[in-house]
Image 1: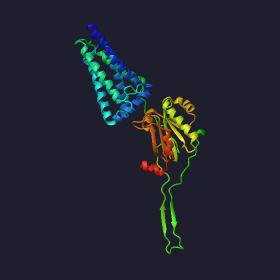
Image 2: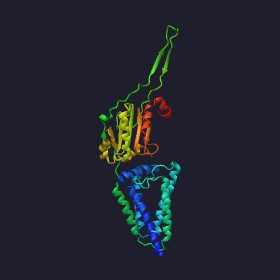
Image 3: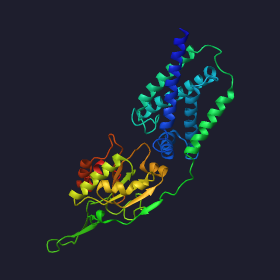
Image 4: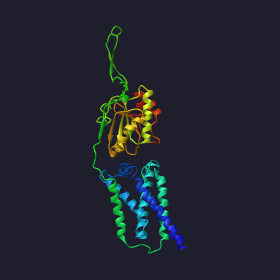
Length: 366
């Protein structure tokens, strides 16, 4: 009976340990700095962490996850400290995920396994509840006084794990928004923009032969296009606020981004009124940009910006690929991610055909 209890206890320890170790490693996928920066922007910034605190908190948290996974496989202070600490951390995660689900619904990736294994908040809650149950059962299986007394093992593993994360993904100083520039429009992006005439005041004069009093009546024509606005991208693309434009947020190695770029290229081949396209690339695997253009069938003006500024410009809670339809600097339509808000060529075709008056009805901000 004792042997069976020992076998079950070791099985539970291995299962939960692997869960924590994989969770820590997944937050470093596909590359440590990219993955941790994405975790900070998508998970920590919405919680109120500043851009100065988030880089330290994220690395320490991942280091603690890694350390707990390793420490579950040894006997020092296992029953009295490691298991209770692991349960406490899981309870905190459950509370946070429950709050996020109540506020924002069960959508998006909770970030528990980074981008390696996307999970919804509810899926993560279920996973964490099961893990808590396993740990409680494990704690009951372990006999009293079974802990080895060396506390230095705990501190050594903890600090080594945290230090290892900082070494794999060192904190980088704030980078300028634009790191590489490609400002010149290339031959594949030469579609002319049809500019509507600006708002005018037409003067209508009454016929003096039929009227003894000359009356001047001013007739205000309905605007044919939105007023000029600043999109905030003119420092990257000087003509972005003039006429109709398409602005894209892409990651060079992202398959969904390449698919969106292919669809846009196909639209340009079949629609002479398709606005010019500009791209903001994330500085992650930037060496893949030539291959990106080769696969998508065209080359467009682009800029490359660092990871955190990229996510901030894309927008909180949003994901790639991002496609914006701008008109005179005004945001008419924004598609993002791969779910309900994802880019759909048919929707872009429809919105491009709408007049300013039609768009104004659905978007009063124009």
